Length: 211
Figure 1: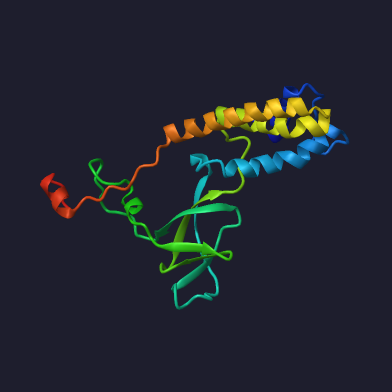
Figure 2: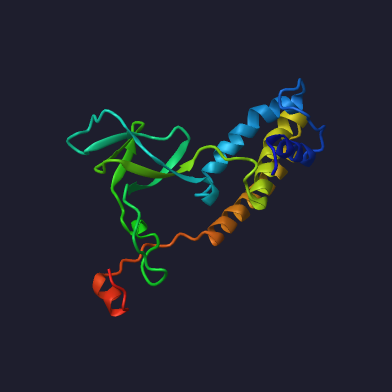
């Protein structure tokens, strides 16, 4: 698992400058890594809906200032980048079909209405559970293509302040864009977004599945 220092040193090697032992050491390389590495990590969370960055958490109620529109208001998780979906708390299932048509899990076929505005999540569900993307990506968990995209993006940000080389910064920015697109395409190919399939009880019955 790569540490942030390892990734910073890979970015520094891309622009052919000295390596660092700590992000807090008194060197221009460390100073600029400290300035830009967290920013690039935050931006990465917005590149696409990374499967490794999806989390879920029960939500804490807040004062509802839009009671005429929504029954409940919730505080978003501190590490939320974007909300994805809401889930209603349910008891454990006694039986589920092992395969077949339809959406798995079945909750994905239920689009619970909500809005995220003014720092609050509004919905009509009590005890809501939020599916969301986190705003913080763990350097040790990112996949190789995403790692490469991060390194090149960071190198592009470091090239001018560290080396005062605008041409190098432009070249690295072009390489970073290509690497970013490749990483996003790889993520979406491995984890395609499937539209929910709505199967009626009659269709399940025709297949011999009891509900």
